[in-house]
Image 1 (cartoon, rainbow, N blue to C red):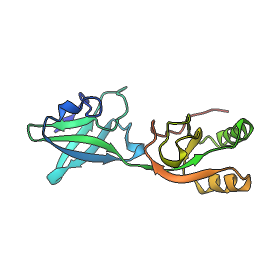
Image 2: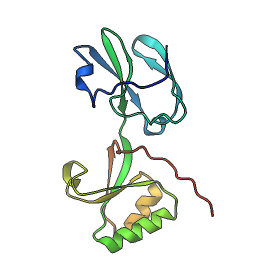
Image 3: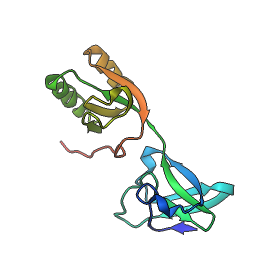
Length: 161
């Protein structure tokens, strides 16, 4: 079977499940925007993903296949990240500029967008990298290593000099 488009998402429309069993297919962050993939679903059945050019990235809950008994949906695996919480705007600027010079993709959150002990913090999130840890430690910048599903998959930004 070949999937050419995503028509439903059970996060957006939970009623779509309608009593059927839900099977999740876990995707790594880097696989979410690959339009063409070969997947193996329950029971060793192969599924081809061949989405049209320009198709949105896969999201948590996207329905890949549904039949009368089962619904196969996208589940996103957590990513190993550093959640950086500078003390003030000066430190945030320093960190953003320094890591930006390394062309690291980063995401920024407002207070309340993260859960757990970091819920009240604004943060910069980057994929885990031991050299970033060394930089943060050297400059006394607060961070936490954790796993989470970022709001947007990390992508390396193209650039020219």
